[in-house]
Length: 408
Length: 117
Image 1 (tube, rainbow over the protein chains, first blue to last red):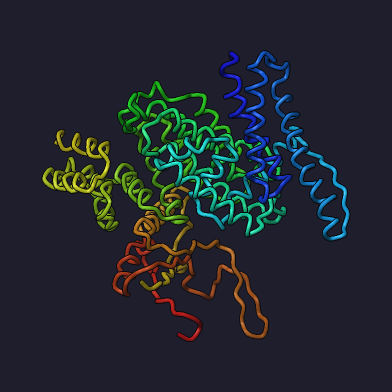
Image 2 (tube, one colour):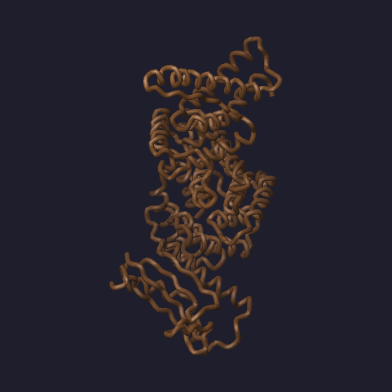
């Protein structure tokens, strides 16, 4: 890596660590201070290393020690106020030590504790994702705005409001007690999965940014897997699921960032390493007696990494969807389940089931009916695809449906 | 939308030999396809199949083990669903694969608020 790339690279990997440790130390009251100190540290680095100072032998250690010094002088200024001025006003006295600990273990602990604090049910999921990107992933406000296809002002307001709620609610930056881990993990996993989906299914055409969001979600989940108390079956299942999905990242987007449908993907672009990694975490997830929705989704995702069109594949996918829908209903799972039913049982049976779904506002619903009628009743297939075309909102979806119509 | 209980009963007297593992797997698929179909309509609320073990408690602290020789119909499982009226609940219940077996039955009951509704 050359000198030009070093600081941006270190910013991406170290900013979030410094912020988490300092914020853990200052509390939510000092989150802005923590962010300022971390930013100033990189500014100092850019100035010192650039202006003849050269890059120090251990740049990371250099950054930590500058951050520590900045934090200490900030605290000393506050301390001065607290020890000299406040006592004069109130008549009390106190002395303070500043054990700012940037050891690897404390960095990891602080980030994990921060993860639990940010993914707190008292703030909206959008804000949780935004804060995660800012504090846990070190994204700039502009990058977050791009990911959400909105303006910087909107994101600034959203993050500001979320921090206010965390402050007012006095949400502690700590590990939940052992008995609560499972329950508190649930919203953390939801946020990680939404962050991943934000990248995977985003409407943004920016392929690099989208991939980055997916990788960040996987990195956060990996931290949970590597930590003993949070290394639970459902966490491994989620990581496995994301590995399987991510394995198709290169194949499912073309050069312009448009979606390439599963059936049309160049399977040589599927990432074999991620598929085998997904398999590894899926095996690790196969402990305990609880089947989470992540287990079921990972099972479906595993079958989707298999090229075959066998009955066995679709039977397995169908059964996973049957159980997934019993845990959590979603229109897209209902539609996918019906498609699997047509492959595992028959198209006729799937048509009867599809017509019961009554998802008449959803263009995927009509596209599915069109697909099911294709070889059975051409006129009905055309009518359904035409209805899908009327309801589709994005250009990509419209093009895909038009292609189906042209083929009939 | 009201909630309804679908109670599945097996006739133990008519049943000959216990089903083979392959048959069990086939029953399981049929059952899951039926429940999955209800869940895909967002009408599944909860419920489960039941294991073979059980206890029966009678007055004067009499507790016996199941399966229960003196009980003809054995409860195989139950689910609760959402439906707009009894007709819809019954039509969803009719898909229960347990009804393929002679002597079996499915009972549909509307759930009420509290114990006295």
